[in-house]
Length: 93
Image (tube, rainbow, N blue to C red):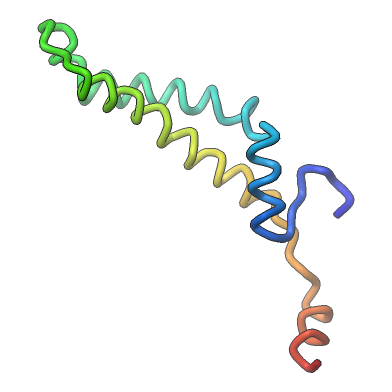
C-alpha cells in the first residue's frame, strides 16, 4: 500500500475510519443530508412543539446514517485489490 488512505483488509478499513480519515469528506455530506431528512421527516413535530426524546433520537439518526454510508463509500473507493496474478498464486497453494 503506497498511499496511507488505501487499504486491503477490513481491519485496515476500520483502522482508517477510527483514525478519522473520513471526517473531512463525510461530515459535510452528513450535515446536508441530515438537515434535509430531518426537515422532511420531523419538522412538523418540532415546529408544533410536540418533539419528544424519540423525535430527537430520530433527528440524530438522520445525521448518523448518512455519515456511515458516506464513510463506507469513501473507504470503498480507496480499497486496493490484490493483483489477479497474486490471487491465482494463493489459490494454487
